[in-house]
Image (cartoon, rainbow, N blue to C red; front, side, top):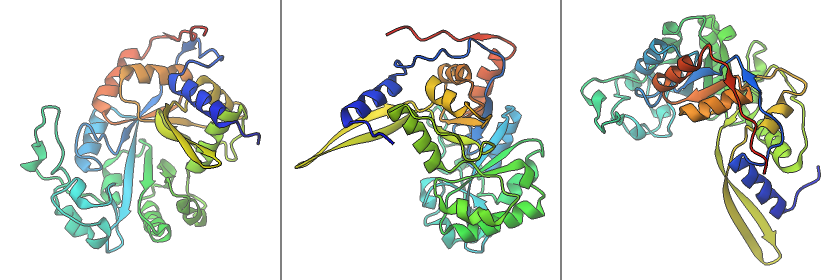
Length: 318
């Protein structure tokens, strides 16, 4: 691979951040809108990863659910994201120090604030649910994405696999993790449906943005997910030190999407779409799905655009 100089890298990343250096015309007309995936069940609408959030997301007609999994001390997959219980609940300590029953007795909505700054769930407790609890209230036709957060990976993968087998849920679940250890752990389960490894997605995106090089997907059926915007630091190494430049990149652009679409129909997902402008832009790029914090807000945007042709304007020449 031909590596660009730091100056070239900064310029290209700045172009990506401003979305102003693309020469490819977006889709002229969009007839299929991106699916709405409720991030952690809809973290802006209800306490994240709770049955309450899942029910609300379904009531607002989210197309799919993205849930975060850790393992309790008694080996039960439960839904919770932060490293410590104090971040969201009235408890304290890591998930792995408590049984599933103890976690269910905590209030997972203790820190949740509504738009007026109130704490509505301090008077109405919602517990930390198990993965099994969640799968049993989600209709079988709704896809579920499970984000693996705890390490080591092997015990959690085995516990999750057991639940998916017992609940006959393998066909509707796709597994994601930012840690490559889960790719290895789930390799023992041939029925597992996995995202493309995040490291691979990141590298492919950067090769397009920085080197104008397009690498095909190793597994075209594996979805690729990456943030809509991402803060990055470019480091230039000198003889006597370093220089750093911080930029906000926009990874999904007409050029990167065209690359990922070149030889496959690989599903493409943007993480962190939370307003109408970004949702429309994702639709114009032809992305398959978007990960949103508020299904209540974004499904309304989707429904308002449904049935319309989005005439996506070509970027103005620079």
